Length: 254
Ligand code: FES
Image (cartoon, rainbow, N blue to C red; front, side, top):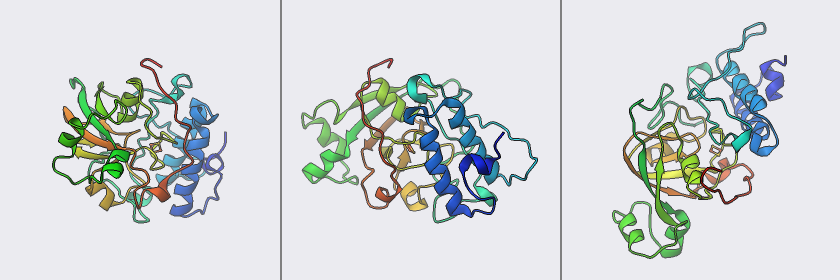
């Protein structure tokens, strides 16, 4: 079996920056959406967590479990989630947020949650109309503007389902790349309500405080949410993007 360093293709003395870069690169290529497999995806995540946890040669590797479900090749592991634990050396470095706002390493949606209603808006609409994420009446304006159903609407998020998957299950094509919490392609701005991410290794504390979350690993905490998606080109997020997965129209049950 490959060592975690071999799995991530880094030297054992790699620093935090190199580790995060390697993880971001490998988690995408290992994903079933990008020609990898569920096993490879899991191995990359396990390797990353092992190194962050202070892996030493001879240590036993414990497979990373997330929400109790392993990603499957079928369905492109759209349930694929990244629940990395505490950052290497016990904290996040490089200016990225750690266990900050909206980040909960132990997050498990309450078993009796019935799901959440999410009102969404495409950031392109804000650009076109000169609106701002901080407009108090942003969603009221959107509701009155006759926008098409991809730009503005609602989706229902089933329990234990992340925002991105819920949107896709409803037939929407929101941006994404890695589906593993390692890029900013799937970023959304949570305007109202609250979501939890099991961990965060790339968003700064400032971004978190502004409501930026990664939709591929975000689970609703409140019954109602308002989110603006397609914000990946905002300053600070653009450089955290990976080459995008080609958008595709999803069908319910796809
Ligand atoms: S798609 Fe990369 S973090 Fe969500």
